[in-house]
Image (cartoon, rainbow, N blue to C red; front, side, top):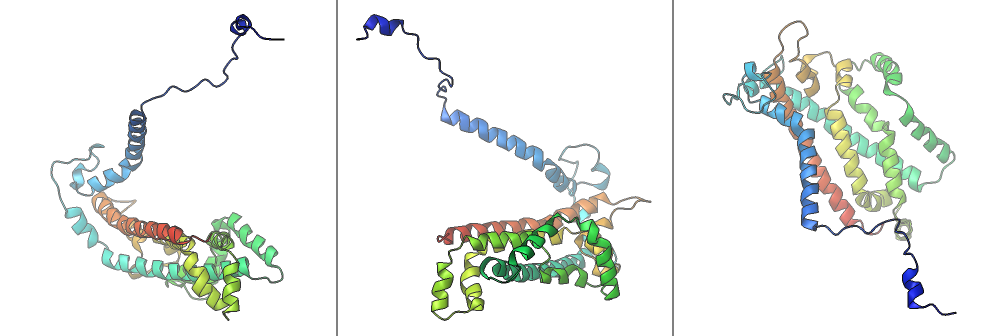
Length: 299
């Protein structure tokens, strides 16, 4: 049976469930997307921009409005803020850098070794121990706060940096261990076998093969350890009662007075300076991550 042209013309056209998209100007679409992104970026960053602008305003003009410009530009807030307190901010910065550097070193050493053991070694109870390790991520920090304080007090570690630094050297950050374990598992085991044929033991395999290839995970661990330790307020508040041991967050808190007048100009000025190491370390770590991913072509 043949189909004539009349039957074909009379046959209804199938309905389009997904109509074809209209062709738009790609330049116009990109312009709209970038405009929306910039608007959202300005909204998110405006509080930080306002804080930076407020640090250069006179004290009596900071809360006059949400504008960024004042009647005059001044550096008095930075001068008064840097020399404030029993120990000026040069001491607070040195204390924070010391605690942060020791915490990063401890986290990288302990977490990388522990991750290598879980990812490459075989030992009894490995899966159970790894499950318990992941279970500690669900444990709120407030649960262990009081027992830790009692323990450190019995050890006479109060008013020292030991409670802030020593736990990092024992692999207490389960998230970073889990991150490194997952990354090391993606590395081919043929590399380990080739190195073992050449006479390498676990230590040389770990230091010469795993660590260089795990630079993305190591950079991520270092970056977040720096941010968490530098911004930590509760730990130093609990264990550091002497002002000469204070870190930057405690120094910033000293500008706020619940019973009297607070110095917001100096507070904003020192807050801006305290953000500089975080931004700089983030930029350096981000470049390290990109280089690590680019040079790890065996995954």
